[in-house]
Length: 316
Image 1: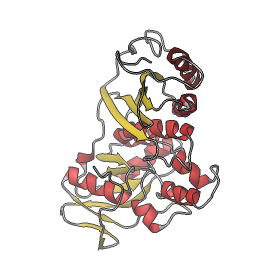
Image 2 (image 1 turned 30 degrees about the vertical axis):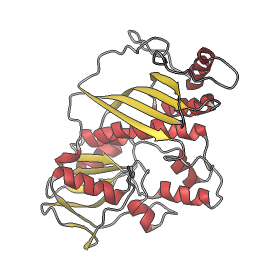
Image 3 (image 1 turned 90 degrees about the vertical axis):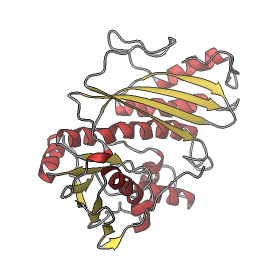
């Protein structure tokens, strides 16, 4: 990890920047690079060539915006920042290869705690942190860039849905929003629903299975199923007819419809049996069929009634 020339160093409460960076490297707990690769410690990472299509995404998590600073920890922020970015790879059906993490923070921020969360997510998801950056700033912000690959090509886009396709979910939704509600009401951090909010699990294996099963379109549920499904329909120039939106146990219908941050996958395919078979072959929980794609662009319904664009959007 390096800092740009001329920037003001960010220091830990008890050491110089170089010392802080060394402790961060230990907190991340980097794996030994495969032969021919160079990870943390140089001016840039060196990776072996990616296989097939290269899939790249970046996501930013801001302390107090993407995670409530009064209810959760910096370790949770680091974990969630990586998980959210990795979910974008899952939504394309990509296999993860590398993570880069850039942090801006005020002096005195517990950077080791933050990077402990980064390291925990990277370890659980089986993808190394290969580099990053550190700089002083007014707010705590974590920018995570992820690199993935689709061997043989075929990254799944939002724009491929076709009339007659079936709409599937990897699991019921609303758990993250329910967890935030429960935490605000005093539930402990180890409450199962609270864990779903602070430690989301990107559906990487499910994304791979959906791509292999020939999914026509896919995206992750980050801003609410209702809003994200409208976005997929916009990209594919189609409509949809939902039979139901399955709610996670403990979640309300509104939380399932518009809560967001579940990071389940919304999958569209012609052959649901192929999708089910691909999931079963990987030992994954069976996906849930929730509706179908229709040709009429303006036909966007849930149980026969219009479905509004409900979900989270930043105000700029």
